[in-house]
Image (tube, rainbow, N blue to C red; front, top):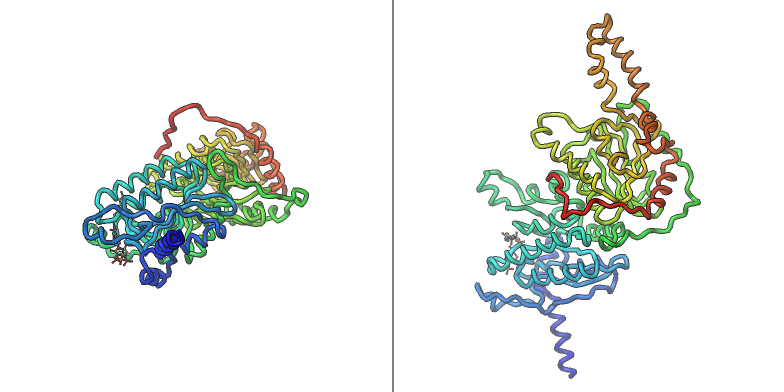
Length: 514
Ligand code: HXC
């Protein structure tokens, strides 16, 4: 029997070596860790339980019958992160470049199916040359099986993709269907076709990094939600993200202890809004003063910066924050901001994460570029997302809430639960100057002194409309509050809303304007 036990140990040792010492060294030389090293960094110590380490591919063509590596290029199993179970797979670039074979796909599918049954998040560490070329269509079928399961698992359990190497061709669509994509600067890239194909088809000369590196996807395409300098930092931030999320759609995010007695008015909030309503300020200052321990985990921080989205805790409760950023494009809603906001709102709603909206928005961005590219279609995504969301939804209007953007940003009319405004709020169809020039056009142009008349009408309009009280008189705003009281109000509101139940009509699924 001792021989059999030793045989098992030897087999496991061999499986741990992946493609062998040389390939591991080559991986390290590129600044990349191995599949196992990554898992060790990510999960709670000693918690990883690997399955399917003896799985082998079934291909015989192109000499593959003579090349077998136990595990077949992907390490799969279950572990704990922050003390809670997760399912994970980690592609092993040292084995056939991490390429996806029939059996490699089956391993991923097996842990995904289990994750859905037990209600645990799925984390994929991607480092792969794509479809295993020698297996042809069988490998493509494997990808399609994964895409299907990514889609079926969407909204059931959180799915996180960590791209830590190449991710090319149709393979990019698995991460793209998942909820969040992490990338590592300089060592990971994603594209549908690589630089060589681009050169042939469009005659553009572009590097791997410029075409599909982390910076490109964080700032230009919006494909990556988080990017970091190296793999260690990346994996630590995956843990940080998970701490804000529940395990599945029936679960609620973990609540931290919070000392309510220590809450007091925060005067620093009173000094943030400038006297001049056209002067920008940094909305992140407001956010940092409202969230527990100034711990705001921003999502897509370099993309569509006119809207800020991210996770935080308020009174120990996990919340998703959506805020306009007056410092960038005056906080206007454009196509990219609308899509970014909408996707975040839908994620939070799918996973029972309450929403806090902090609003200072002058409206939707005008212009042919926006209109021709479909601001109507894309702006309505954000509207749809807020309308459809049934999680607790609280809004604080700090300054401007103009036009359609007032309606869209979680107004009372679309089921905002508690809507507060600061005294500096201006809730109106449009800004004073634009409004006065339209409604008093004749009076102004025919006046003896048009400038004086404009000034006169402006001050009338500002007194009448550039304030929160008309909305408050109607009950569209539940209360006008001092900035310093905001956190206290929010903690109370989110606590009260913990037992909120709201439903949408029965249907197969809605038809969000895509
Ligand atoms: C089989 C592969 C492979 C693949 C890499 N390898 N990609 N084997 N199928 N798709 C193997 C290599 O032969 C090599 O084996 C080892 O992995 C490492 O590859 P290198 O090229 O030496 O590494 P590197 O220089 O770092 O380049 C990595 C790479 C390159 C950029 C990923 O290998 C590459 O371009 N591969 C092909 C990528 C690709 O076009 N894939 C198909 C995409 S389409 P040895 O034995 O020499 O170490 C796709 C469709 C999905 O995936 C469709 C879903 C619907």
